[in-house]
Figure 1 (cartoon, one colour):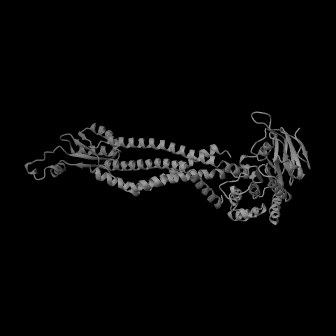
Figure 2 (cartoon, chains in turn cyan, purple; figure 1 turned 90 degrees about the vertical axis):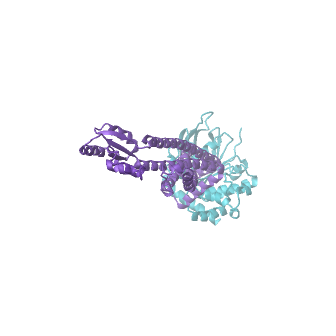
Figure 3 (cartoon, each protein chain N blue to C red; figure 1 turned 90 degrees about the horizontal axis):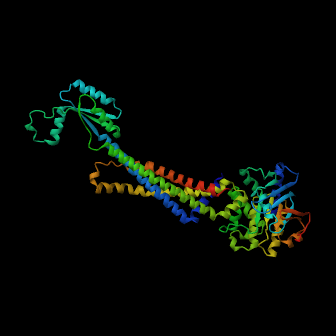
Length: 256
Length: 298
């Protein structure tokens, strides 16, 4: 636990240092102003969305398939550009950002997927070290950081295991370790419990909550009604490309 | 770039090669075949050029004079020949020298029957050329000079030598160009498959914040390594074969021995080795960089 606090306190310090880049509100880390995204065919995936998330918040984004959740995640990763509106994440203007600046921007984000997306031919240690190699951290630092973050997610003893030798919950922990090892300011989790049983789902959510308590802003896109209702966090509900509800301590709103 | 990143990139490039080993082997084999032919034609061309150069040095045009020509006129003709740029050297052979040479060559022991020099009109200039292709122009010029009775060309025709040299060069360039295109195409295919195999990994890399350079460089390294391996194999084979082939030619076609002038193996490979490696790396680089640009818009 001491290690978790240490790593996440460093995140907080980094976040504070970045404050100078933030152009919108003082503590606002994610800002969407009147954002729309239309694809070539069909109805717009997002339609005039406004969303403001402060540093250190824990936010659930819920909604049925086709509600625009995935499009929002892609916009926040700068995988997509909005058709209209403005998006600012950690002070980066994601509409006007230069292509060569995108990697630097993404290094401040941690991302966790439903299907874990681990490299199957590499062991747990290598999967996490991979994230550090990409951002060109020295081998010496990698050897120090990776065991520490694996201890944080409770996988210190399984660093040699290949993904196929791990349970779904353990694989998701590796993915979280990989997302955290570069000390991001924001953690985006896209259906992180989608492939897990209830017990593992709870453990993963507790881990995300712990990460959030130590300063990292956490955004979780989920379908898991039980967890959303139980955790009593901010809940943003989407339907057909618009935000239909945004509650400080909300629950999962049933579809009519 | 950190040293550890450089090693990581090279390691990933090597892993790529082993992951698609059959395509990598096909690319290496094609580059190998391409550079083997290049090396072979290069060796043929440089040796042929050496032969032509040696032959040129021995080729002469002989100029005979009109009967009763004065010594002054011979000297004037000599001065005109000296002015020609294609002439590297000339030698005056007097009638007496010509007779002495003839006697030595053909009449050994039977020359006593001649009381006078029968080759009294055989004084001549032996002209050596610096450029064999200019022989016809020089002959035409000399035939128009006053006081010249006859101009004799050497036995090896200049046109044949330059013609064959040019033909070999054109055929070589044509075949090599086709093979280069095939090599680049195959490397491009290998890299495309490598990208498809690693698509998941590339996506994760992009999400984590890898730069374009970091994502692309293992594939470029892969192409360049294929190029280097593809270059070293044929150069090595040619190096071993070179002397054996020359020995074989001399042994089997001894008639050619006087005609052909072979270069030593180190002279040929001093140039061929670095040129082949550079070409291999170049083909690998071109094939991979164009493909990663096309398929990896990261």
